[in-house]
Each structure stands twice: as C-alpha cells, then as structure tokens.
Length: 123
Length: 136
Image 1 (cartoon, one colour):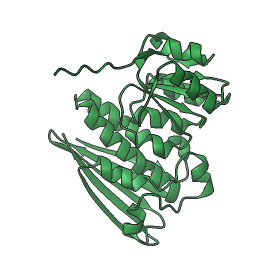
Image 2 (cartoon, each protein chain N blue to C red; image 1 turned 180 degrees about the vertical axis):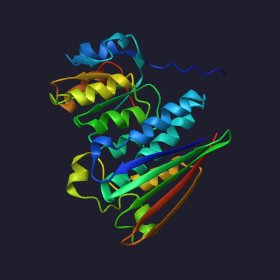
Image 3 (cartoon, rainbow over the protein chains, first blue to last red; image 1 turned 45 degrees about the vertical axis):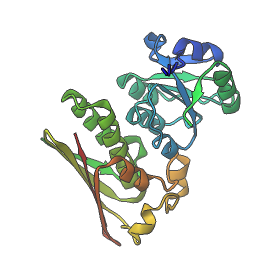
C-alpha cells in the first residue's frame, strides 16, 4: 500500500488577504509558503515548537518576538490585536529576512480565519 | 574557532545578540539547519536567563568540525536548587520578565532538550555556569 501525504501550503499573500493585514517587512517574499500556524504571547512556548514552514501569530510586539522567530526558524510573524511594530523591530526583522505583518484582528479571529483557510495546527 | 560575547543583565533589547551571531557563523560553515536551530534556541534561552536573572554574563563558543561547545557564565544570584530549576514550570522570574514573554519556567528544560550534553553549576550569591555541547 502506498501512502501519499499531501502537505497543505498557504502563500503569505493569502495570509495577508485573510487577515486584512499590513506587510511591514519582507514584502518581496509574499510568494513564500507556510503550512502550520502557532499562536502564543508566551515566547517560551514558541521556542519549544520544532516545526518547519511555521507561521507565528502573536500579540507580543517586542524585539524578543523577532529574535524568537529568528532562532526558531519561523519565517513569518503576524502581530495581532492591532499591535504595532517599533522601528527597531522592523530593522531586526529586515536584517534577518523575516516577513512581518500587522493585523487589527483579535488573536481568536486571526486564528479562525487562517484555520478556515486551511492552515494546520502544529499539535 | 573561539568566539566571545558579553551579555548585559536586565537589557532585553540585546538578549539574543550572541545567538544571532552564532547562527550566522554556523550557517557560513554549512552546518545542517536543524542542528543550527537546536544550538541557537538553547543559546538564546541561556542568554535570556542571564538577562532575566543576572547582573552580567559572558558567552563563549568554541566551534570545531565535530561540535560546538558553549559556556554561559554569569555574575548573579545563582541557583539554589538546580534540580528544581530544571523542572518545567518552575520559575523565579520577575513580573517584568514575564511581561516580555518569558519566565514561564521552560528555559532550562528546553535547553536540555536541544543540547546533546549539558552541565549546570551554580554558587548562590555568586553566579551560574551553563555549559553545553551539540555534535554536528
């Protein structure tokens, strides 16, 4: 028997569209794809997730959220609840090639929209 | 190759600088991305611990073709009960640290998970030394 696993993929431009979001850094990488979503304001939790093609949804708008994403190899971070990135955050995100997005949606609404769109949970 | 970085206690804006630099170096020498991730997540957790708890600290990384050895040494309050500190969920972090998204008592356990070898020693009132190795 042959088992074929289909990996769901969502382009980042679709993420932007679903979340009615504003791209802050990495606007040239919206054709990149993600498969999984993880949402947390607790960065310690984010650092325990070991998953590729991961999108992070957080309301923790600080430099450490950018550092955490960089260390955990997360290529796209969505800041929800209308949290705004600081210029320092944007600079660090650009330096590390991260795509960062701001959305006015609540975390719950953002997760619901992305899940309805097909994005998978890590666990 | 030996690299050394200073870590400033309490300064969250610089937490992760050493990890970022080590990540660049490991990428340059073509270490597998999954191994890099394990190394820098553990190092970053260690840096955050110094920033969160200590007055100052240093990170020394020694990289050869087989492994990376990292030593994080700090001047600070030290750890009273290492076995308890290693337990997931145990934390003595301040409210300020928690507001930054850390201090949930996950750090040391996550370091242990991501390192191939770990040694933690501490003197109360003096400081803590965390050593770890990851094999390539």
